Image 1 (cartoon, rainbow, N blue to C red):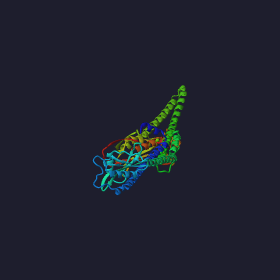
Image 2 (image 1 turned 135 degrees about the vertical axis):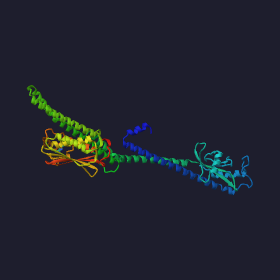
Image 3 (image 1 turned 90 degrees about the horizontal axis):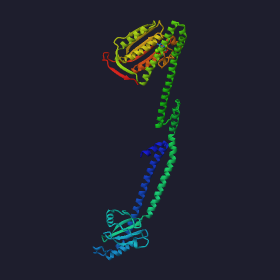
Image 4 (image 1 turned 90 degrees about the vertical axis):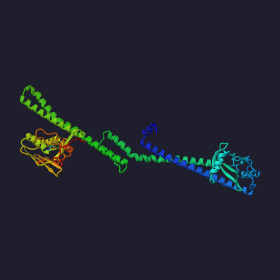
Length: 511
Ligand SMILES: Nc1ncnc2c1ncn2[C@@H]1O[C@H](COP(=O)(O)OP(=O)(O)O)[C@@H](O)[C@H]1O
Ligand SMILES: [Mg+2]
């Protein structure tokens, strides 16, 4: 198929393309079928005709029995002159066989014409056949149906048969009978027209039936196209009508719907994130602006103490913004799969000890304990990332636990292949409705209450980051809390079976 034809096909609608291809295939098959029918019919009719001519020939040759050749004489002398008796017999033969549609000729054994029947008025013209061809046909003819089709001097097709003339067990000559094929040709032409009209009729009928069928089969695709246009225009809540059919279109519909659902979720998340970020930035920015305005007024009064307090507030707000931006950057990197985690066989005690030390420096009066079981197996983690997670959790515990409360780190191994780190506090706890959401981005359980717990509230990203980081290290993080009584965060990490196993460094990019 040339490139141009392919382009034309591609520009057509699928409906037209399918119809054209199917009609083309049907036309090809019907055409081939018609050709075989007409060819077989023509062959059968010619064979029939040849057999009939042979029978006529045999019948006519009974004359030889009534008038046998003179014994002892050869039918032709070397010069090719046949004996008198033979000529007479040949004339009788040709006269019997020649009619308005058939011509009979008697040839010598060498293929030369001895007597031609075309002298009789209205019979078809005698057909001059190459003597070599005559011999060949005679030799290859095995039954009564061998024939040749040749054109005569008037360019008309004739069917020719050859028969040996035998008398007294001697082949004395060749009988050639030729007849016009016009009646058979006419019949075949009519048959061909019937076949052509039949093929055209069948094609038209097929086209008539095919269009509604193809349209019905492609209907879901049309609906799909319209819906996807509407979706592309921004209506992500739209879905394709689900089909019960277990075919390609049915599968495509459900995959398409899944894709749109995912897009919708991603889009909603994106919108929510933008809204959350704007909202979160607005609070410190408003505070900053307020402080700046007061400062501007205060500059004239020269109140040093008030100025210092305001600048200190502004510093806190900018720090809060900085923290939030940093947290968002970590989450974005995790989302994009750009956060690099270096998994290393790590001694858990070292990490927890560091966090415990920092917690003791940050405490606002809470008592902090750390209990690590002896003979802890190594864990396969990124120690820096694990420390970051534990610091986020510690930050919460310190924020949401009153000064007289307790914070405990408990580290133990479980079922030989995992290590559990628990951070328990006796703080304000989280309500049962809020617990399922604490790992969501920007989620803060009861902001008024938690903000009250410490003068600088968080942005609601700490636990979201913790969860992503722990899962990226192949671990699991859970939160259990009782309102007004305290919260326990449990981290389960993969242990490396032998504690003495050499440290092996693995770098993994999260996807
Ligand atoms: N130890 C805890 N005690 C009480 N509430 C907690 C504790 N840890 C987390 N929370 C609740 O879960 C919310 C989400 O925590 P986090 O993602 O760290 O955000 P935040 O920036 O507010 O600390 C907090 O706002 C708080 O309401
Ligand atoms: Mg926090």
